[in-house]
Each structure stands twice: as structure tokens, then as C-alpha cells.
Length: 324
Image (cartoon, rainbow, N blue to C red; front, side):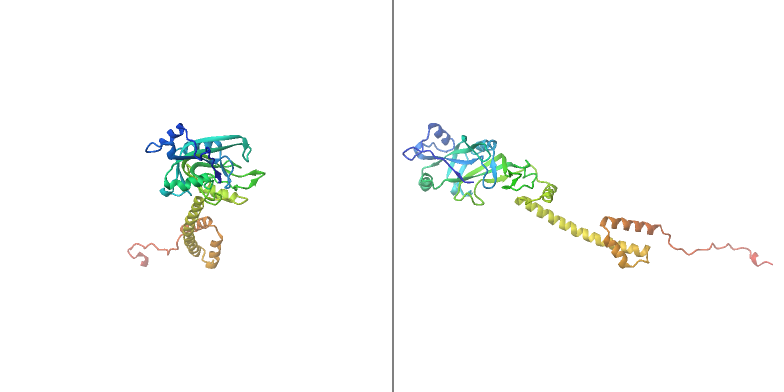
């Protein structure tokens, strides 16, 4: 998001610093600083306009960010290197311009940060670039709790929806409103904020993970393109891998069941050829095949096995059968 800061300076080129400002600045410094030891400027960090990613902060979110950005550092290009720390925010202000409306017809509201840096040799070039308007674009790093679709009202981090940011649905532009900021990390000077990693750096920490059934349902019901986060894509890949392993186990079980059913056919109905019984088995679902095999097993057990009749031995007598 391309955000130009506003810097108010007097004719000498040095921003006028009030005693109140110096008191706030010294609350962050280890030693007491004087007004001539610091260079102060202000920057617009974010506003309530829809950005190039088709996301935006509402006024309530901007007010919360104003609290979170107090005391936060300014760095370069979102670098985590301590050498790239350049300034610190000592005061923030939420400003509403009643004479200007955003693209949604709302009063334009923005977050203004007041920052300072020590006047030391290391910062001379940066101070000169700020004064000359070279270092002008900034972006912020923060976390938000939810991202609400403007079309359906769903939190896309918890319950993904089929709507695509930047597209219109029945004349209504789809964008995500970033709500309930939970943390502010830093803000940075950036050269080209329109690039992929420039603009507002957003991180989401949903309270609960998306249900895979909800994700698959969203994809199956989609009538247009659908956008997935990296986490969602990784979870889908993991689910597919798990299902692939389960499918292999299912194939092994199915083959064993078919073999057993053909065997039972041969025992109970020997007049049927193996080719015929194999065709019957392959045409059935696994559930029906299991039921058929159980029926054959039960029928086979109820058939009495053939037995040779054993005549009862006659008891020895007194040979009266030979008596005349």
C-alpha cells in the first residue's frame, strides 16, 4: 500500500518539537534528549481506503492500531536486521478528513504516526532523504484476528468463501475488511510499495483452524475462481496425501475380499466359473461385496456335510439265528 507521510517543518528546515513531544520522546530514551538532538517527522501509516490487494482497515481497526503502534520502531524494507532500525514512534493520532471521502463514500480516516530519530552521523543521509521527499512511502507490519468478505460477511480465515477479491458480484466489489488488530510489529520505509511484498504486511492468527470439510465444500460449490492461502493449500495437500494412503489400504482390503468371495462361490456354487464370479465381484461396491461374502459364508456353514451312515452293531447273541 503506497502511503505518503506528512511532515510539518518551519522555515529553518527543522520540525518544531514541543515540550510535550520531548517528554514523550524521553519516555522511550535511556538518556534525556534535547530538541536539537532529535529529528522529528510524521507519517501516514494506513487508512480506511481499499488497497491494491483489495483489503482495507475499518475505522475501529485503525483506532486499535493507533494504540498498538505507540513505541514501535521504524525500519527499512521490513528487515529484521537491527542495523536497519531508523526511528521510533512516540505518538499516534487517528485523523478524519470530513472534506474527503474514500471509495466507499465514507469520511477518509487515516493513522498518523509521530516519530523521532537521533541526529547522529549514521542518520544524516536518511534525514536528508526524508527532507527531500525521497524516503516517503511506508508500509506496516501487523496482525489481525479476522478478514471479513465484503460480499458474504464470512471470515475467510475461518470459513473460506468462493468470492474473489477485486471482482464484482451483482455490482458489489469484493474486498476483505481487516478487523480486530492483535499486534503491531513495525513500520518500514519501502521503495516500491506496489510490489508483491510491499504495502501492508498482514499476518492472521485465527482462533480456530478451518475445517477441511468447509474448505472442500467451498471449492466444490465454487462457480468461479477461488483464492487459497498458503496454509490452506498445504493443508489440502496433506489431506490428499492422507487420503492416498487410505486408498492404498482400501485397495488391499478390496482385493482380499474379492479373492475370498470367489473362493466361497467355488465352494457353494461350483457350477459357476471363476471368470463369472470375478466379474460379479468387480461389479459390486465394496459394501455390497462384503454383504455377499457374508451371505455365502453363512450359507456354506448351514449346509450339512455328507456323512457315511454307520450301522449300529448288533449285540452278540446265543446264535439263535442259526437255530432251526
